[in-house]
Length: 158
Image: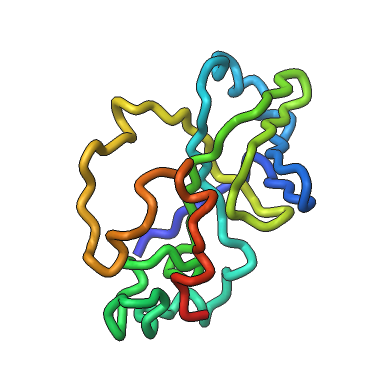
């Protein structure tokens, strides 16, 4: 099996009030022309769950209410996975191009989480008009905007 090397380009900061991504200085030029994109897709590393044991987990007992009794890890959004890679579409509030800081409205990452890559969200490539989901999660919100007021705590078995 081939092994790949990843090099973080920056770090996510979440101090409870502000969320932002700081890029390593050598990657600041890569921010050019992001003006006008309202959202970015951020690939990041679930660094708090990167253990040999966590990478070996392939199934989990019903993490979501109404879901099947056992689910394959690829059918979940769990941080416990063979390669702990995460993807979040983050709303941009401001970009400090000079210092390489991207201010975001929200992201489901912990403080000091490594960022692997950033891509602009473009509806022509990233939006699906009518996605299909299993019945057990079909009542979940259909957009990130609607998710803000959704009682997510009622959806999980943990």
